[in-house]
View (cartoon, rainbow, N blue to C red):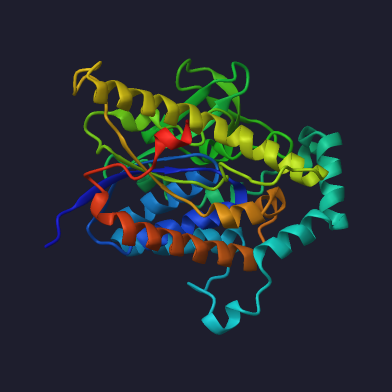
Length: 346
């Protein structure tokens, strides 16, 4: 029997682009020796994490895959595990769909309305569209003490700081708060885990996308697999209004992750130089699964509008990216870091 490989997962948020993470998880769950010890997630990452944990406790790896399939069928994905190979060639590239959406009149009108009209203007007609999906999670399993530890990130509106929810503190409202973009949704009122008072919360991506510090606990494995949705690098300078807005979105939602990765790199350098004694601080090994070429071809339009064909293609892209990572680095898990943080911050 193969030795268990224990990892932590860090799942970024990014709207419907979270279907890429669905594909990554679907492929990782095909590896019976990989044990997921903890999950930290924000927005779509929190949705994926909740589906993974609840499904895993109900039916192991296959149960997790089935629950993820259910989640994305609800969001707008095709139910088929994959588009047939012969059909893939006939599907428009996601970039084509993204550009079509960006410059379509309904999307442009919706964007303009979103900037001028508060989500509070809808009064009693308002309902968060995620509610009907999220409330169907089995929170007895999502919050269970068994299975992977699960952490959900949200931003406390009044003080602008991150809050991390775990265990019994996680419920449907917490998941919706983690995915609450303030231009689209009303702030979600929750009991603040630090103060015990009711406070408004927005999307966790502003302060932790996702938060890595919950994974610093001594009992958790040292390997953290980050699934990136928002591209870190774009070679082309954005010039059109949609391109500029999209890059602003990406930079702001990557900033908190980059700060934590820089801190991890700093600790690694102190340990390697002997300035810190081994064991005084957690020496994490960071791994990343991403497809920046694909994400560079997409935009905030395909994040906001869950187009079934694009979601299906994102899932397949995630599976391929995870497959490439496993082919190249599966043997590195538990032994050495594969993300070049030094180059990232040089």
